[in-house]
Image (tube, rainbow, N blue to C red; front, top):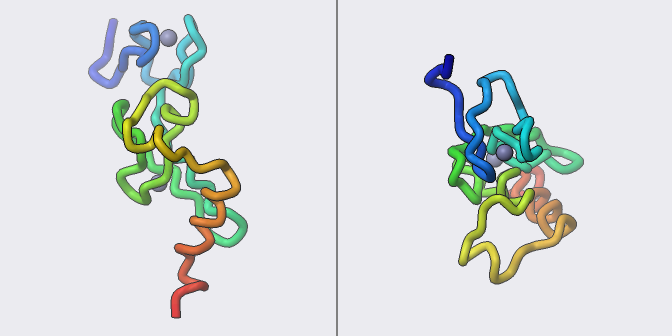
Length: 99
Ligand SMILES: [Zn+2]
Ligand SMILES: [Zn+2]
């Protein structure tokens, strides 16, 4: 039985059960989560985004699908920040730095 919540794998199309976090056929993540871990000071975002989202709808950080190479964006692909740059951006957005 395929529930309404079941989603096809973005890589191979296999329908997985809702409770599955990764595709059991190809290993692709099934939940497109925000990769914003909050850095050293902030709170992790953990927002679950649509399967076609390259950026988190909540905070604009890259999603797990994009990081895993499952999605491609013309915009993100041009100048893809490295992990350290992402972290410093997160710090910069932290309320501590607002004045
Ligand atoms: Zn798959
Ligand atoms: Zn986010």
